[in-house]
Length: 167
Image 1 (cartoon, rainbow, N blue to C red):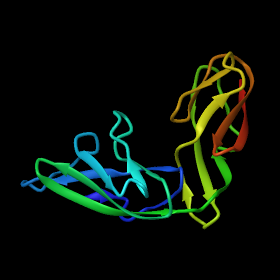
Image 2 (cartoon, rainbow, N blue to C red):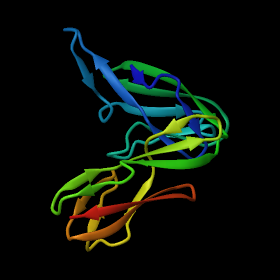
Image 3 (tube, one colour):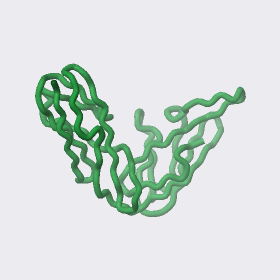
Image 4 (cartoon, one colour):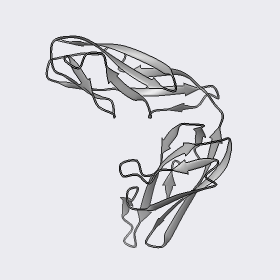
């Protein structure tokens, strides 16, 4: 089984898919990193087979494509609909964080698109002062000194800044 089922994917944006297998004993297991991923036609969407990004489907051009996941001869499919929606805004949560020195804060970015859809992924995270706060690719920021740092989420030229206070 591939989830989400039949996702809408804006051009140039990647959406993570999950492949879940059900075994003979009824147990379920996440097989996302163990399946063989394919996507046809690749002129509409592509699917990543790069370690750590397996199952990320990226819209190429408007239309429908079929994503397939194969594990031990068992096949799962979903239809991906690539849209020409454009990114309008990015919202970052929490909006006004203030944390103690030496602690961490998980940030989440949600992009809002012209067709009303949203996605929580794919932004590039940066800190304007890594001497105060550092942030990794998944949005986890760590305070390393007292002060004010600006955490920035960027996607397709849209930028959202959040001021972050370390006590």
